[in-house]
Length: 637
Image 1 (cartoon, rainbow, N blue to C red):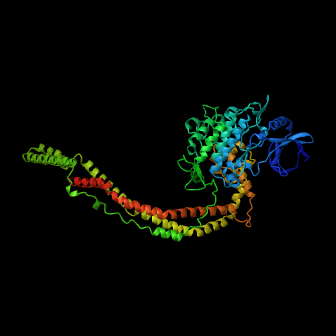
Image 2 (image 1 turned 120 degrees about the horizontal axis):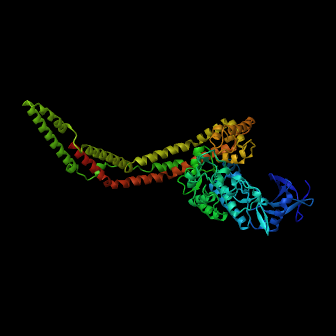
């Protein structure tokens, strides 16, 4: 290439190609300076020159650390061809962090707290631009680079809307999936963008970061008519995760987190940003407003007890990532290695557990209760019932005697007196069922009381805990053989794993498939379809708006990639898969060690609780008295 020279006379030698797009290419610059150069290739250098020079003249690069603003104009043979900018060393595109598949490869140590901090840093970056009077305009998932520390560098600064003096340099591009409803379908090159417009795209980016790459307007439309594209859902204000489902007529994809899984104030900010069908152009939270919300969200994050790789907001009813992984069968976060306690001595720990003495069986509860059941008398209800019963039977006998007397005196109509006599003698008296029910309930309550007493004042819970600890110890001893078996199974699955890795490496976002544009790709991603590995007819047909024709295009694409796969037995088993096995074993080992180390203490506590509980036997006296009283009453029946 012809020699490139900066405004200050610095001669540039191009190094590695860092990226390219429709308007130009970005190269690393050889040498010690951490800069890159963007060279325009679409023939529109002249149209961009004045904006770039205005940004350089106002020294925007010195006024915010979050943005790769132009440093110097670059010329070739005296003609403007591009500009230099700060290079984000080791940083990767934001979209690789949002999507779980890419994130596990490109940001393997990233957990949910890391994602919150990236969202926070992105909000800070946008806030710094707003303070400069800059409107990004074309906010999208490729507008920023992220390094392994979560630091954000916003790029494509030459496309921003910027005003210098009386001259407004507009942003003429934008992706519909990040464009607010009031600008959908309009000619963006003729519009003056505002901070409130940026606030919509900002909220979409923050949502995608926090919700595993899911787009807030990608869901299942439950209203009348066809399924909605993302841009159409935006235009109609149909936020898929809104709790106002009767208004939005939208359902989010299955198994995803919901607004109840994040802090209420953050959920409310999303509601304000995305509006509703009745309010399509709300006053949205600014970047500066997002900063304290995300700071508090970060501080309110807790570790999942079931999986140390999971972090989530403390207000959530349960871990949303456990729920997501259980529902989808996928892994969201790659947990870091959990080391075994170097001082753990299983024999010593078991000896300590065995030294805890059992509390023994619970004392006989009846013998403890100072109740003289012999002194109990039938209750008033029972006595009244017996009085009514015998009065009724006496009346029945009298009626039967009179009937017989009349019939013996040849008065046949006396026969009819036998009917009421029989009813009074053999019919069920009122109140009998109530006494029987009371007796059954009292017996059941006493039985439950005895079970509780024997369990809490006896050795039941202690024995269950000790048996569980002994089983845990046996499983702990078996861990080495379990690990060997799991690694052997990996070897047997080597071909399958190589094919999976091959398919996973082909990202849907980079594929060229007829009728599958950016909007549909984003919808697919929101339903967990990111690579060729995720593509199958069943999953595709479950995505709103995807029928047999589109499903076939996608499965044909996967089939072409699959056909190109060739198994190489000489390639060792994927180290990442081996790492997963070892981490799984390490997690089990750590959990077992924790349980066993706490075992003696927990057994001692259970023994103490059991012995203390024996002092509270009088709590059961009421149930015992009720049972014996019911027995006395039942004896009258």
